[in-house]
Length: 147
Image (cartoon, rainbow, N blue to C red):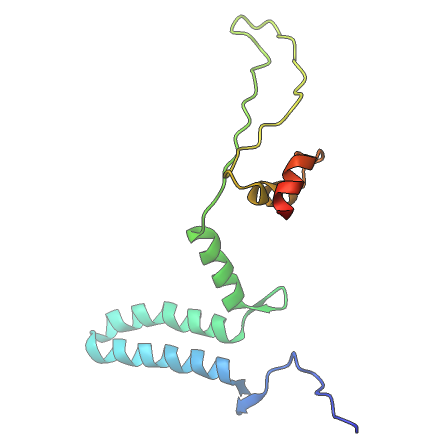
């Protein structure tokens, strides 16, 4: 039995004239906000507040960054801004003394990686995420993970 496989599944269907459903919702929401502003505020203030709304909704509907919709850029920005961050600080000794005479540089033998938790599985995922050159997981911890 033959089945027809859908083609061009990445392309959204045009539902409202030349607009997709998402574009129509973005533009309709922006128009609704502008109408509310024009209804309840003085004309001059409403127009000043409506301009950024119009620009933002037009960017949501039509603007693409690296062939991706603008909403993906906004989502990534919010995830980065509001998400948790891990800062690792590596203390380096100064190369000059206060007298201006250069000090000897000591080779750094190991980089300290903070221990995130007592779980060996999380320690393993940490080492895989930061792509360490040396594998800190020993045979004992591998056997504990599989148990």
